[in-house]
Length: 241
Ligand SMILES: [Zn+2]
Image (tube, rainbow, N blue to C red; front, side):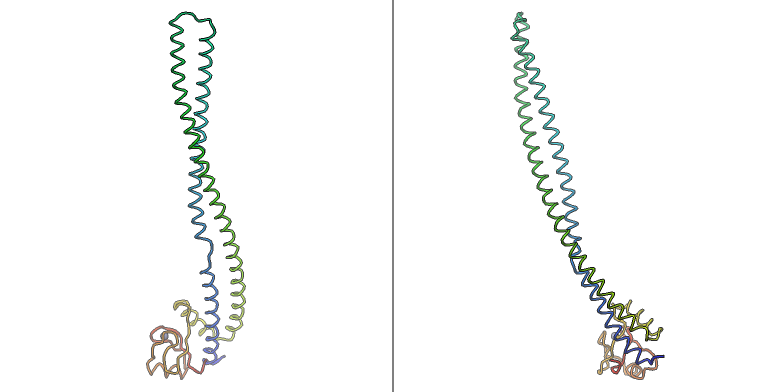
């Protein structure tokens, strides 16, 4: 069985290792995981979908207007053919055909305007959709790069952590299980720090509070593991360093 001093000495090394593991992991957390770009991309995708829907609608409206104009032209040709065929001589009928032609002529003007407007709108919406698509492609490219860098770093951190964890396994085998269990419990609850060295000035190495003289004596005597009255961490005497 190791002595308490040996346990505390080993625990200080374990603490150093645990701190290294925490640091490696938190370094990974500060890296750009691409989440921000993904959010921008998703917003852009929604915008692009809306623009594309507007474009499809504009194109179908243009097609519609063109078809209407085309059928009006056909109607006009037909009326003209009848009018100039020479088959119709009654003035009332001729007047009626001429009136029809005038009306069709006016309608044609309106329809042509509608077609032009639809074409304009369709072109604008096409350009907008194309721009949005280009932005999306650029974002996707950027996301790919950021993710690749992140993954590469994550693999490196995982390898580092697994290497440090191997060291930890080697260290903890020699520690009394109950003492190690206590350290682990405190470490989980206290921001990753489970043990601290008591300074020669009698202060806790973690929270820097001056310890009572009774506690200082108990830490030095090492009959049992002692904890800081303020932060609750295990205390190791200066000789355990
Ligand atoms: Zn403390």
